[in-house]
Image (cartoon, rainbow, N blue to C red; front, side, top):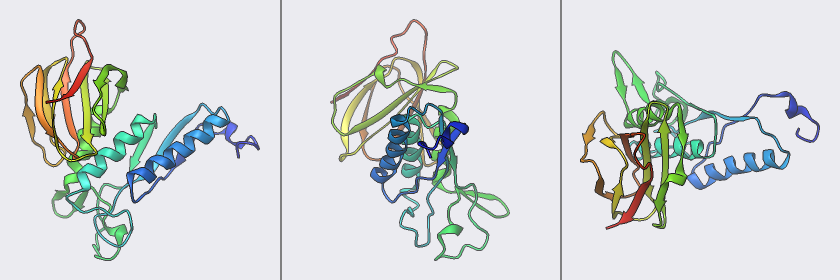
Length: 228
């Protein structure tokens, strides 16, 4: 399609990178971007469908306990590769709820007389509700710890949001935050923990940690992550 000139006529390249693992998910995104870069295609890229069923037989299904982690990492990995928009599939589970049919279990919530949120709904809100209208600034993070994944965004309203996790077992780390009103946003509930300003001591594992804080213009915006 590139060689035939067809893609010169489109505004956006969209794709659905469903995957059973994050390595495969990342490789699908990287493959699309590499082919596009090889042909000097500078237009936008959208993931117009992605999600995880919490039941049924699809190989990329997720347990309810792992659902928040998968929601956060899927969104963050995509955004870190400059994917312009990500459309989540989907808001509600199917009405029939057949245990064997994954298509009935893709929702962030169950729809009944009242909405019944899965934990993944809070994870989606933590990222989608805070990363919109922001700029990725990972160059402003100092971290030499192996297997620690981090992404730092600065929002238009002057807030910073840091999302990080470790691909190894739990480790004790210190995070120096250049801001005030530091909050830990839960990805499993509506809870918000208010933390002391300065250096935060915490245990970091595979479950993502989401920190939100206010920046001041005169402050150094660099975040430092180190082991304790």
